[in-house]
Length: 463
Image 1 (cartoon, rainbow, N blue to C red):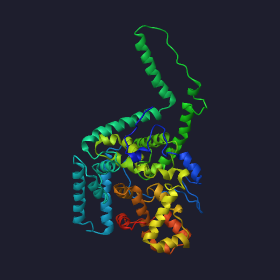
Image 2 (cartoon, helix red, strand yellow; image 1 turned 180 degrees about the horizontal axis):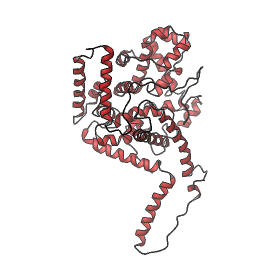
Image 3 (cartoon, rainbow, N blue to C red; image 1 turned 45 degrees about the vertical axis):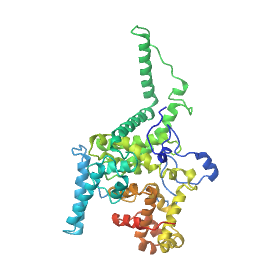
Image 4 (cartoon, rainbow, N blue to C red; image 1 turned 120 degrees about the vertical axis):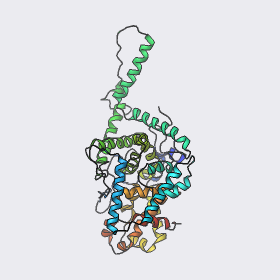
């Protein structure tokens, strides 16, 4: 048994306890106390909620940002990202008119890059200052966002002297986890038999002798249906793996980093599949829920774009650790048994309602009583998937800079952004009926992200 899989802070340690440990302690007791809620979440099933028109939880979004490189991938991912950033700047300039991208904006962007590079070069990272810089948006390229996210998530310690040691240990532990949990029983038996045969030869010396057959127990037989059978458990997880594969095919379908038949995109999907399947095996109380692929995508995308070749080569291992840490704040939202508890999704939705009421009682009354558009109908997806289905990838990365850098935690800033999203379309909501408002909030329109985030920061607390 492999103990101490990853080194996590106390808060995240409960999410990644021990091999095949549960994400939720005392899950059965809480189920008996609170009763079962008819939740949308069931492992390996479509993540959708019940509503009058049966709208799907996950929508297909149009993404302006596309990695337009072919199967050969001659240029590095970072080079392509920089090209896309330049193209995006030119597009914005053409849209706003000549001369609209001012010299001051260019200087401000260069100054921000210099500030973050300086902070990351320090022997001891000042996390408070790092959060303050990251909250205004991290620059593309150079691996700055990837390194900053690892620090903000606690994957890297503030002391630079410890980085190499921590990364090496955690990457080795991930490799060991993959070997133990993602190999088929026959592959594991072959490895074990090789070790056993080697030990026997060493014990007997060089003398010859008849070859020995190693017996196969009933529990180790592929046709065994016993619950303790390694093969039975392996085939159970193949169903989850199939669901993961289907979801990964739909992850950012217009971005070639994730989609398509190139060896590059297939390699990326295989790495994400390993992460999600390993998470499911380690956490049988949660396993895999549709939508986790969307939460993983920005992390793996950013880490793969690192200009440091060693970091990019280990993007899978680093993404797994940071994915676990990120879910530590919201994992209870994926537990149907906890929906009605103080830590469940319904409690979080209630906090969003309270926040809206504290900041705009008129809009709150219109949604709550006039049109009866409950947050379960739209904010359920916003919160559980960390807004990954509402905006294009570049906007998601900018939003996550603010989420991860918030001193009060991801969930606090997430609720603020969700409330700000309602306020930004207030006039349309006040003039709309149930159907119009539901359609608007489930297909959120394009918006100025910087304005949205500033509005979120300026909101009054709900208490």
